[in-house]
Each structure stands twice: as C-alpha cells, then as structure tokens.
Length: 302
Image (cartoon, rainbow, N blue to C red; front, side, top):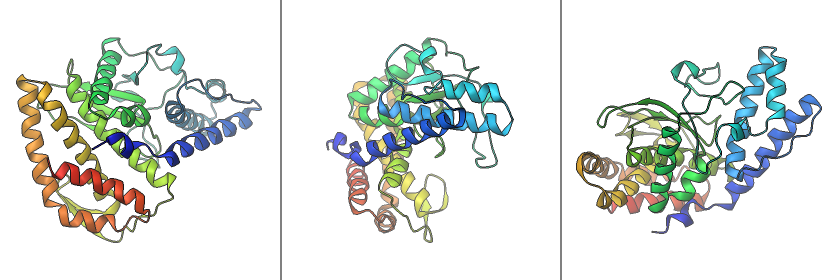
C-alpha cells in the first residue's frame, strides 16, 4: 500500500494555506501591521499560525498589549529562535506551562515570548523518530501534521504514555516519551499526526459526520459518537501499520513490547469490523471514506 497517496490530499494543502493567510491578516490588521508569511514549509506555518492566534487572543483577553504586539511581530511564534535544524520543532515546557480554557478542558501549550529551546537531546530524539516514521511511509503524515511537538515526561518502556492533540491547535502534538527510544516516539507521532490529518481532511472537504449513532470503542472501552469512533479506528490502523513495518528492524525489549502491542491492536481492529463500515457511512465525502476504508483494511490484513 502506497501510504503517500493516502496522505496526499490537495484540499488539505489549500486549507492550510488559506487558513494561515487569514490568521496572519487578522493579527496584522489588529495592530496596523502587515504580516509576511514565515519561511517555514506550509504545514509548519499553518501550525505556528494557530499558536500566534491562540497567544494573541489570550493576551488580548488579559489586556497584555506587549505580548499581543509580540505575536503580531512574530508570525512564526518565535520558532526561528528556538531551532535551526530541520524536523519537528520540539519544546519541553513542563506541565506547569500547559494551559486550559473555557473552550478546551484538555491542556495545551502555546509558543510565546517566554518559550525556551528544549535541551538538544530532545529535538534530536523527535528528529530521529520523524526520520524513522518516514523510512516506513509516514514521512508526509508526520511532517505535515506534527511539525510542533510538545514533550512532557520521560517514562520507562511499558509505563502508560500520554499523548493527545486538540482541534484548536492543529499540527501540534503533546506526548510523553521514552528517552533514547525513537521507535516509541515515532509510534506516537504517527498516532497523533493521524488525528490531525483526519481533522484537516474533514475540514478541507467540508465533510459532515452524523454523530447520532454511537459505536463501542475497544480502545476507550465505552460507546463513542461516530466522530470519535472513526478517529480511533483510523489512528490505531495507522499505528498498527507503523509497528508492523518497524518490528523487523528492531530487537530486544522494544521489539517484544511492540510485538505484544501489535497483537492487541489486531484483536481490537477485528472487533470493530462491522461497526467501522457502518460508521464510515456517516461521512459525507466518498473519497475520504475510501481512504479511511483502505487503511483500515490494510491494517486488518496484518
């Protein structure tokens, strides 16, 4: 299966560009300045634009004129001062640096004037993880949908690892990590980039999902609306494909852990076979339906 054809969707790139330009224009008009698009790739610019939008809004609500002006003057949210290397922009703000709001109970991080560069071993870890994902067909997915990585806690292999995205900060992923283990970081980059890709695909195609039906999710162990259920099937299908591809290249403790993990994913994907096809019918865009179905069936055949 050529995953590059699955992830390449011109409508997403058009959406990225248009949304980025609207954010830059909005913040620029707010200060009487014209904002020039940053030099980063389009996907990174799109992710960073949401950081300046969120940061500027937060500053405005707190009547912080200096911080608001900083965002207007830094359309890359200060990224150029945080790294000169290619690959995901990686920060480690600590849990105290995360925000919540009335709109989102899920914590998130916003790049800003006080953001510090992460210790070099952490950007190196995410670059290696992104490269590993690319080696197995997930390069475009991670590059375009996880250009900003917020690392939380380093944990031992086998410990519960948290990872998440929120729709208001597309292109940004938040995750715990196993130190010196790019294979595991790559797994979670693929998972969370998958969520960001699907959100962008739904927006770009103006797709509506009928959420009146619910489906049992073996991952959440509860019934979920079609939107959440489809997200789970999609992202765990992608992760299964990543793990199956990487397993022959690794050994030792990580190999054993991921082999067991893949066995569990196979079982869980099989249990949702009927519901998955039913849930796909709630997606109004037929080509997007076909992409999700193809990836799921490929993972099911592992």
